[in-house]
Length: 478
Image 1 (tube, helix red, strand yellow):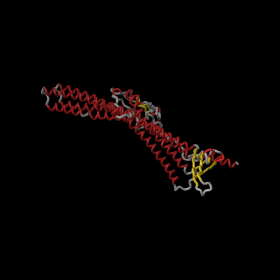
Image 2 (cartoon, helix red, strand yellow):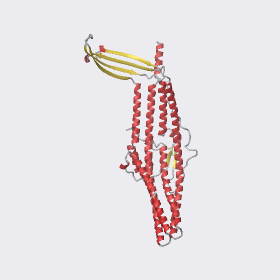
Image 3 (tube, one colour):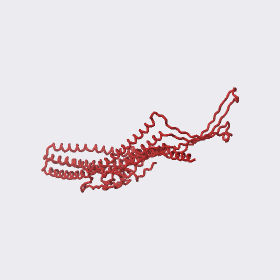
Image 4 (cartoon, helix red, strand yellow):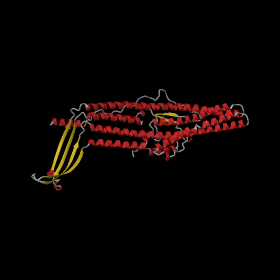
């Protein structure tokens, strides 16, 4: 009796065992910063707001609200509601969760019912010639106790893959909102550059008028008039490429919203009506590794690959199946369910792999290799994330310095142009000097407009790189 109890206890313990390694989350990198030297954002000058980095601050869910634009808020909300990519990501998550339910079904007994009818005709040479009916109905129950955890590891693998899809949904949300804001800023940037070109064209026209007056009074040659006309025509050619940039951004924004470009018109975004965020949140690297959806998706893939080792390892061990069936047979429906016509069978079966030509061992080794590959991909994902943030932080630092320099260049070029225009009117400067100062002003005016918009764009990139507060967003599946 004690021996039987010991055997039974060993079997019960065996049935609760899941072979293969248990997943352990990788430790986040302990590097204290993203760059070798500390990043500080310099003063952008008196004409533009300065920014500062806020250490270990979280990004709010609706981070685009910090631009204080009702138009921008509305467009991002429309993108969240109408994006086909976001809808596809939600459907992929729902599909992955159904795969968990399908795998989990293997942990429970499987019950099937069956019924049939046989109509048989016999010849006169048979003892009982004629037509005979045979009816049957039965119930089959089978159960796999999952002795070595093949099913439980499969459930674990499918659960991890569902987590991958959850983080892919978060990444799609983050990409969508970030791209929507970027395209809105591209539209605003194009408008700002168009305004700069129109300002330049107004000055070109003023110079042309001055030259015409001087030419009519006989003070300058015809060549000065031609030079002024040439400059005006040359600057007019600056408009079409910028207008094309605006059109491309509008079309891209419409697509993000799930709308045909012909059926949706973007708001007239303007940098002057957008507030540049002054406080920029920067999570420490170890915290970021636990928050960015692409890193979490890579971690979940690693979890799935680890569980797959358990599935492959379990196939190296015996498989147990318990089954029971009950079949009722009769010639007529009236007596089919009479207890005397029933036959019951209870069985237990064990299947142990004996020789498979090394296939099962190779599959287990391949699962280990796949896990090691996923671990390397996880590390690469973390490195790429850190590299992206390092690039963005330094870009913001250089943006502030570059904007301040562009503003100084613009102020100097404008003062020089106005002085040369006055001197030319007074006959104290040549038109070549006016053209030179005009060209410098054109470069400075466009350079300042582009530097200002780039600062907005890099600010968006930082919010996205920091995870965009997706944890607090409402990522409902349907």
